[in-house]
Amino acid sequence: MKNTEKLTEINVVLTSYLNIYKNKMPTIDEVAEHCKINRTRTYRYLIKLEKLGLIKRNKRTRIKISNGVYYYRCYICKQHKQIKEYYKNKNKKHGIGSTCKDCTREYEASDNIKLYKHNYYINNKEEIIYKNKTYLQNRSQEKIKEARIKKNIRTREWKKRNNEKISAIESFRGIKAKEIPCELLELKIMQLRLKRRIKQIEEKKNGKETVSR
Ligand SMILES: [Zn+2]
Image 1 (tube, rainbow, N blue to C red):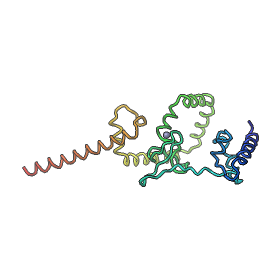
Image 2 (cartoon, rainbow, N blue to C red; image 1 turned 180 degrees about the vertical axis):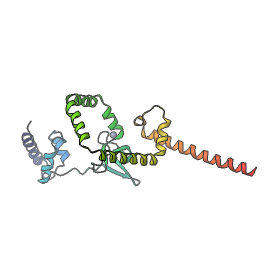
Image 3 (tube, protein in one colour; image 1 turned 45 degrees about the vertical axis):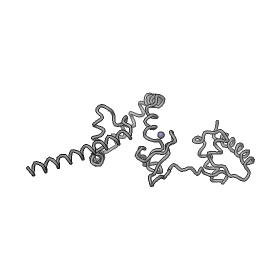
Image 4 (tube, rainbow, N blue to C red; image 1 turned 90 degrees about the vertical axis):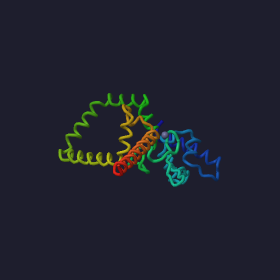
């Protein structure tokens, strides 16, 4: 269906909708559901209609606050989760992706996506290789060096900040960091923290005993 046809179709259904609910201005979601249209695909037109004052934007927000903690809704599983359960994404409003880590992982690992990526690579292999090559060629050596140094600094700083996390991940021998559930990792961090604390206390005790003897 062409875009203009789609728009007229929406207009027709919207008129019928407005006739039924005379005094109530519908939201984008309500119109999408009523017109049985794919909301994401026709979103631009719905926004246009919103600008014309025919429909209003959904009032739904992603955030839920409870006990001062912010929870964000995941687009796939619809659950509210804390910020640490999302991957960072600077381009998004809240600085995090729209799907939680678990859902993102599942999505990326699904056969359809894998197949899609594989097929895309095969069909566009030459173009991709050419683009990568020219990109590397066009970058000056200085810039490459600069970027490498910056990356090293970032990694070092991250390692410093996530010292506990790294040792917790290492304790799960042979398992990839991605595959360890967040909650389990947190428990492991707590366990290691406690172990360290106990060790410290014991060392202190032993030190005192040897001094007193
Ligand atoms: Zn999710």
